[in-house]
Amino acid sequence: MSTPFDSDIAAMNLSDAEKNGLQVYRNYSKAFEEHRLKRFAEQAPPHPDAIDALRDVLQLVATEEVRTLTVIACAFTDDQLKFMFKTEIADDVPGGRNALLSGFGPLSRLSQRIQMAHAFGWMSKDVLIEADHLRKVRNDISHRWDISLLQAKLDNLIAQVQHPVEQYLGDGIRLPEGLHLSCSAEQKFRIRLVWLLGRVAYESRLWVAAIKAGLQPQRALYGTNQPLLLREVSALCLEVTRTRVLHA
Image (cartoon, rainbow, N blue to C red; front, top):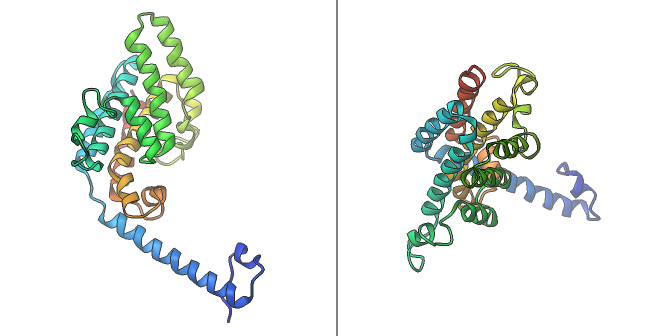
């Protein structure tokens, strides 16, 4: 009996024996990869430090004055990226690893850390782009005195620049259905930061580990086999969204 063919293999101008060989090889490769993904999820450490730090920063995101939130979010992101680079870069780099991350080193500033993480593919690109949007507004807040101008930049960030993640959260079970329709602009901003910083904390711990394991990190971190850390991060983000942001 011939092996059922995937559509692309079936369309090839090959003999059935050749198609069978390709299909068997593909099926084997998929099964082997699924096994490796499952082992990665099972063996990924829980990183309680990430949960503790995330819990602290999300408390601030839920309660602090809204114009301070870009500063808080960027400081947290900066710390997480620094942790990632310090963990993953070998200490025997010429001049020492710490020289890269401090002073005038090439990874001493948030902008540089975002750029290099993006260039290396060491974190989801959408997360890094969102972080960079926050960094630009943070810089304006840090260097301008005109409150009305700063508020306009923040309003534009919320209305035009950020990805509206709140549109995907209202499932009618864990969070109210149509959540995004009832949220104020400020609530949307806080919710977006909650889930963005959750991803930053999560990916800074496991994304590069998945790459080093020879896995596609998006599948390893968010696929069918999910590390315990994702469940813990998601539960914390959900709790803060539901009990702190929506019921403030």
